[in-house]
Image (cartoon, rainbow, N blue to C red; front, side):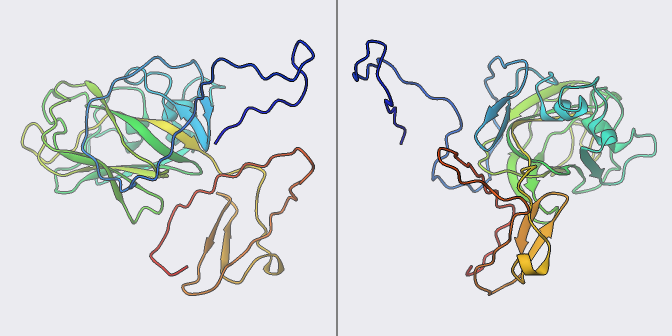
Length: 297
């Protein structure tokens, strides 16, 4: 619910509240099932502002065109729009990994690069490429892929985009079957993602032969769009034994808290910086649950 509350006299020194229009912008969250298994589809796009706009729970990055300057990886490559672009993996914002690459392949960091190169795995079933944001989480709305530089063939046809917060338990975000969107070397395409949760890791997993009926996985570019969330830079938690419960574990690097117990009661942790509760001061908290095991807690 939203309320417009008159707290003083109007321009005519009266207490009439006059308003002939109300509109609101932001993120809409529903109680719909958030099981992240969806089929790829083409997306309609709209113009975006020159810089990311703040959104509840994160910063919004909206797709305009393939490998534009509005993607999250481009944002980190420019060190949050403060420097000339460099590969975000080289800058340490993301970690990239993959199945074994061909001997003549470019390094796997090329998938978060801006150049069309030869980046390709050895031919094998279930090959994959992985991008992990070190201390950020993304709720994706679109992602872009680009074919490599060597041949028009060997393009992806059947694959999945998966998300994870521990690099062990993966959730299907988009599944492609015989998708013919990529057809030429250096060609790119963007797909929409229907996702309600934040993830720190994203994996491309090939699930069938490529356009040349081989099992090589070729990809020379990955970009992602959506809502970017970083752990709060002020609200941190104490690791001292007398300032936290027994089963609480603190990760100082990512400023996250988790409970290592299985059947214990409620746990608590003390913040290292006190929060003021002064009159008229509003605190807003977004609690991101990155892993929720099936327990009775």
